Length: 212
Image (tube, rainbow, N blue to C red; front, side, top):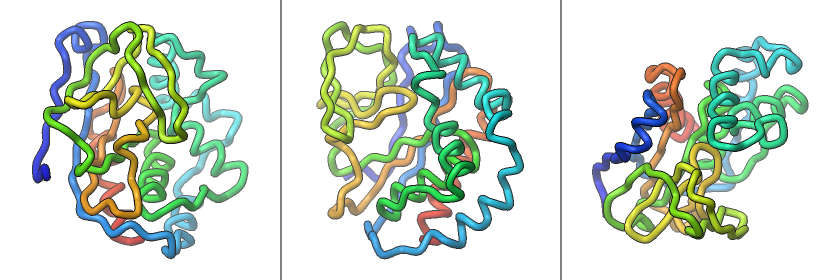
């Protein structure tokens, strides 16, 4: 099992998206569904001072939207993960309760607007690389939906295949399950987002996980 990890960013990705950044953490975990998220949700209510109509103009969300356009995704139809969570929170004053790991990631993403990837380290094989997808390469998301990629997508991969369709969809193979004991946390930064913001998002996942 991996005890430390680094992610290699392919040179082609670096050239096209100068400033792309991944913040990585590893944490032990006991997956639970019996946790209470009421206290961190109350804190989030006090921290988020933004109108839902103005959300699209927030500087961080604007940068993620611009990145989506660059990779061929219409952010008005498929919103960046952080924005989608914040919109849901502002509408309902709550977030979906799934398990302590996923909820920690959602809380961190909602409070920083940074997308978060969560992976079962026991399911990861070999080195991890951020690169462009290959034409026809297969990706199966956490819902089980499979699709063939076109080759212009950015993907996080290990020796066994795709872990993440950057920066918004994780793969089913490495998703957090009841038996997960050690988790890889990846904060997904795109050009224009300060590295400190991405690092803060990754740290918040670990902090929320300890609280939950």
